[in-house]
Length: 336
Image (cartoon, rainbow, N blue to C red; front, side, top):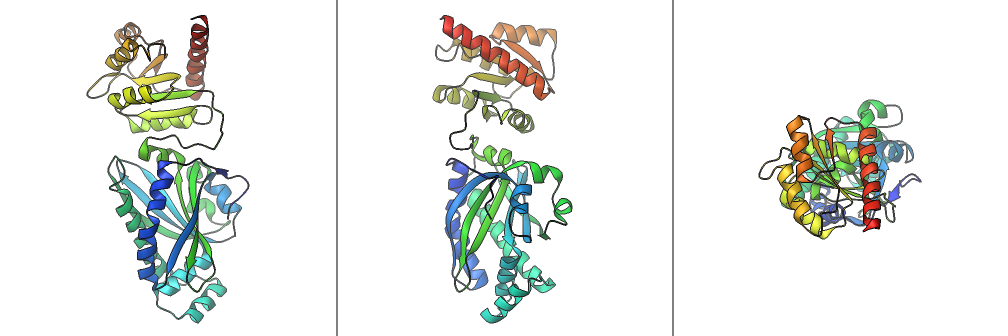
């Protein structure tokens, strides 16, 4: 089911965590189907659901797992129609000959669909149990739908945003003893996947213009920044000022985007601390705020910020500010 528009992704904590759930999934799926169940050869790619589904075989069944609590989004579990019928028939405890006959017909009947929904709910629960203790923030997964999808109904089953947003798609070889190998597919928005461990998940050898650190207690604002900049810049994000200081110590950061109003330590105090540190004082800082009062702008400059950006901002305005100060900083460093 791999297609030419997919791009191999370098190793990540997300991939490691999902793959670490495979043994539990195999054990529990084996119990549900009463068959030995194996997942091997996992590969993580960057693609879109639109491209992935349209370049694969015609009919799939897609289950949506809603991501709730701190994170917000969906994980998609995707199998071909044939495999969905095979698994649903096995859950119904049909004999192997009847399972193969049902799969060859290619018709997902109501009782088989209900049985497959039971299976997808089990997979959702397994992932929830595996992810919950490993992620830094609270998470809960809930099965919201299991639907047959094809080229005719793809635009009604999935929203335009879900279809065309860059996503991380983990494929693995699925083997149910006694049946042909197939593919087990999990897909998640790249923005959401990166939020799990505050990591940058990128194509191997991709060339970025620089590394931006965004500090904001609003997860929505951080997601917007990553969406606006992710194609051109490596974007690291955190909602915690202390984590920002740690990221600055451990990584080469070219520019910092920082909100003013944050709990524990506000952006102006954090800006002053960065500027007092000999290792980071040359890094340009742009303060971002929805309160562009004269006092806020004046205090930002006094704290060491090179510019002030009013929220909400457009991609063009954000890129202009970043390009200007990265260029100025490169000239400054060269003169030094």
